[in-house]
Length: 336
Image 1 (tube, rainbow, N blue to C red):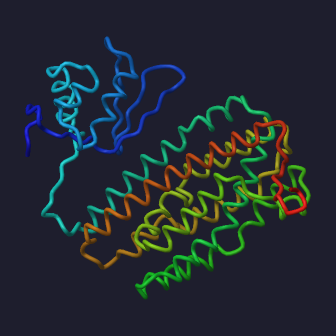
Image 2 (cartoon, rainbow, N blue to C red):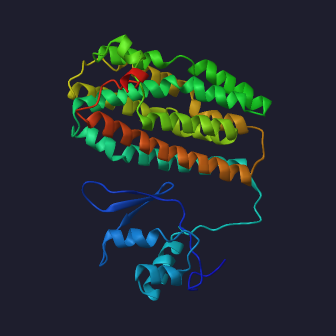
């Protein structure tokens, strides 16, 4: 392995995410590991600016010159990452990844990304009631659109699947997920919307983007789509706890106490169905995953994580604007 002491070394940081709590140090999350970022001397922006060049395309010398950090300090920072095994190590000879290794890595990565989604500022702002109540309504309304689209992306995965066993598995999945949107719809009715308003509502762009990304992954990468179910399907008791928190927040925002009961029942059904186990089921009896397929699946999974970020940004932006129509209307020809 190339020594990080070499100024010509091109370090690439393993994938990480950052969480900045309202109080306390910034947390860097890598898989299941959490690191507190202590600030000594330089500010955090200087650190982030340095980190963005740890992309495998810049030498330590170039990073030093670009950022203005001395060569010795630059080497020290890179060595610090290397000592914690945070510098990416590539094995070009590896063309097959054992299934248990692949599944373990996907589990740890989806755990990290699920945690970051949970850390999204949207949730802390919702919890602390920094939004107007329409934003909470918007969350449930966009959830309705998202659930309603399940048959669309699952059907796309089935139509483009070339593995008969996976096609059968996805067909069973579709039969279990088909027409679950009524649960979110009934919650919205209890929150004060009419059935006509719900069924004729138009999703915000972040929701469209999330749905379309799922369809695109389903179209081109069946393994990646199965991996993605670990990110977008209900995850055990943690998800149920989150659903119960939503019920509590609904009351805090002035909605009826039982308004989310239908939606929470959908979450419970998903947990019981164990749809986060679809990937394990698909790979049962197989010894390895081709490395090229694993790389593609992981990249699609990562893109989906960012689609969720945009989804929550879109909800906060649209429903916070007092001038916007709620539910969102389609713009027809006569509106021009």
